[in-house]
Length: 295
Image (cartoon, rainbow, N blue to C red; front, side):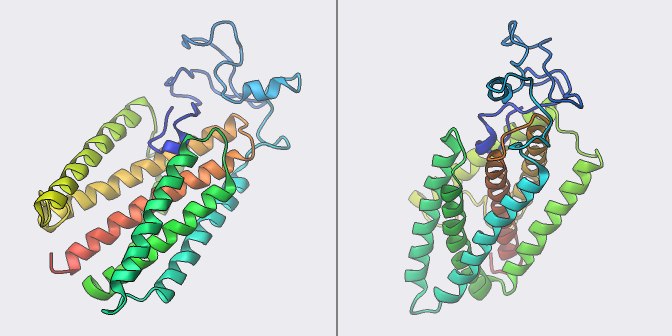
């Protein structure tokens, strides 16, 4: 399965839903190696596991994730905590050190936009790299934090007081709710779910891009998709899409562990989860700004 998240798009993690060519479940001794239903497998018993070839150098089939050098849930949690910690720290520093009063708002906003653009470039670079680069991921988190810190300060001071904390709480609530629903089996991530989420995400992003173009060249709020009543509707859709992205990311992490992904893949998992949480936070921030502001 390919995730909505670009950092996972080059992997094909899957365990049990018969999509992306993976039809067998990993067994207790290691990932699935069956080839039934995989048109690309040929006679290679390891074709279905993206990490199987790495195990062949040791002359043995893939081992369980507990083997030394394999990604574990603890690895994912620690890397994600580190990445989010850097983001939160730089966001707090930006909030404190880049004032958004009348005299400094243009300068602070300019720095924030520059940091956001560089973070976007670093994100794309990491997304297309074959291996995780912790310095690159942490640099992305730091710059994204600067952008979010200044943007949150502007919204909090000029549009909706307390919006930043409310957006943080909303993001945490969505994360916990999706995690609980996923672990309880209420959300089943399969081929149909993935296809629906990707189609919805592509339509959403396309509409937002068109709205932005109209806003840039026509002035005002563009087509009005991000303000007023339509802004509230699209903000809710954005949060729901973020929740779906989280479910896809959880599935990717689970499959990576089940297939014995290398430990460094935990950095990619942390990167992907951070990107999704940033998406949800921004959607909440916009929603709160519309609901409490003057839009």
